[in-house]
Structures are given as C-alpha cells and as structure tokens.
View 1 (cartoon, rainbow, N blue to C red):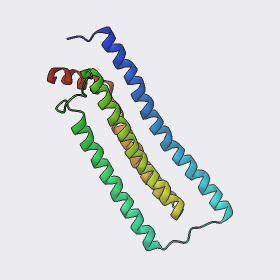
View 2 (view 1 turned 60 degrees about the horizontal axis):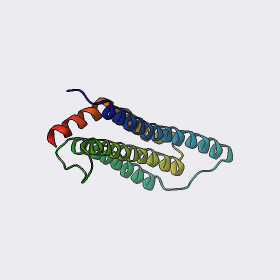
View 3 (view 1 turned 90 degrees about the vertical axis):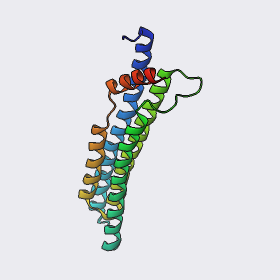
View 4 (view 1 turned 60 degrees about the vertical axis):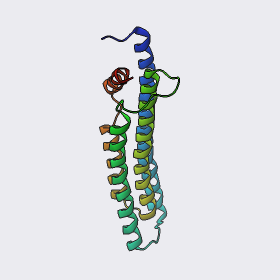
Amino acid sequence: MGTSIQNRDELNKAWKLIQLIWKAGFILLILFFLAAFVLHLLSFQAGLNMQLSAELLDNMRYALLGLAVFELLLIVFIHRKALRPGSRTAQGGSIQQSAVGRYIAVTVLTTALLSSIGDSGLVLFVLAGDINVLLIFLGIAVAGMLCFRPNKEELKDLNRRMKRAG
C-alpha cells in the first residue's frame, strides 16, 4: 500500500523539522562542553575554586546521576507509550498530522530531557571543577541522543499504524 505524493511530501517536510530539532539539541550538548572547557581554562588561570564541602558535592553528584537515570527511563517510557497508535488522534486533524505531531512532540521532549542531563553535568562542573563529572554526564546525554535519534522509518511506520487503527 503506497503513500500518495502529497502525503510523502508532507512527511518529508515534517522529517526535516524533526531532524532540525534533534540537531539543535545535539549542538547544544557540544556548546555545553565548549562552555565548560572555557570555564575550566579561565578558572584554572585565575586560580578560582568553589569552596563547597566534599559531602555536599558527593550528594549533589549522586542526586543528579539518579535524576539522569530517571530521565533515561522516562524517555524509554515516552517512546513506548507515545509512538504507538493506541491513543486518540487530535480532534479535527488528520491521522498523518497526528502522527507527525506526536513524533515531533516526542523528539522535542527527548531532546529536552537529554539536554537537562548535560545541564546537570555543567552545573556540577562549575561547582566542583571536576571535568570527569562533566564528561560522564555529557557522555550519557550524547549516548542518549544517538540511541533515541529520530528515525524516518519509525515515523512512516507510526503513520501507517495510525491509519490502520483510525
């Protein structure tokens, strides 16, 4: 069962937007790393060091790492729940618009959650000055970006399944 040319063109336009959202999130993670690197160089040259207790920094590290794990689990849940055709389509909207809208929403939410993991690493880096913590959090975020990157076939499949269900 083939898709019409208009349907295919609309999906291709939507796909370009989805890719733009994902690329913007990925670039944001790179900018976090570059900002942290510059901050590291500046604080090293100025001899600055935040004087927070080691216990407080450890507690923050564990709390933010736990939050990162929770966010990753939330992303898995969102992908499983939102990318299946079982829920209703938007009122007055076509099935295709609903599939595209749902996929865009999942992409934005996934990118935001993964970006917040990078934010956590940046905050810990600024407070503790430990580049390894930053690299761990950014590594988790980048791995998540790569694992949950948008997939055009997944979008087409969602559109097809929603048509059958609707």
